[in-house]
Amino acid sequence: MSVIALIGLGGNLGDVRTRLDAAMEALAAMAGITLVARSRFYRTPPWGNVDQPDFVNAAMAVETSLEAHQLLDAMLATERAFGRTRDGERWGPRTLDLDLLAYGDAILDDERLSVPHPRIRERAFVLLPLGDIALDAVLPGMGRVGDMLDAIDSTGCELLP
Image (cartoon, rainbow, N blue to C red; front, side):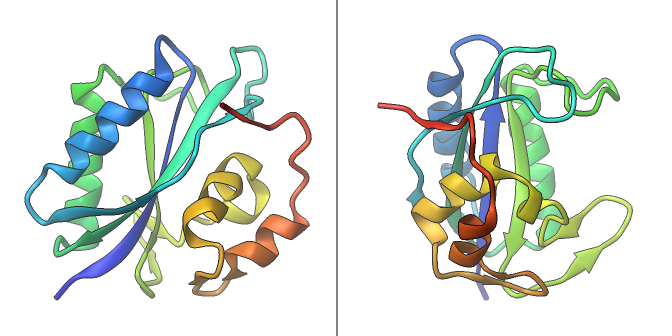
């Protein structure tokens, strides 16, 4: 059995676009994960801690036979492989951030994972790239990605060439 999972990617330290490309390739090369679609890149203002460089964000859709927590573990391993250390600072600068936004129609909420990601509706940096690859997707308990995108303020966000 396989499921379509939606993953958000971002970073604001170093050569982020090259790292996001490489992270997508690394995830797609793992057993049980196949890349289905990838978004364009967006420059977005920082969220939370605003005293840091702008972010570059993207999204990808994968078909996976991995269970949700196995996919999360693969994503965390990919972050570590690209120099990410999780030091406890939320919303701080980072080389790479991978977020499991949705896992098929599943609704999960435990100490390690909440899907659909609970703050998707608040974040233009998630919705803009997600709109590129999953505009008509309906996220359980949240609604259609396109409708959420229409309702978000994307001031300061820019599609990168």
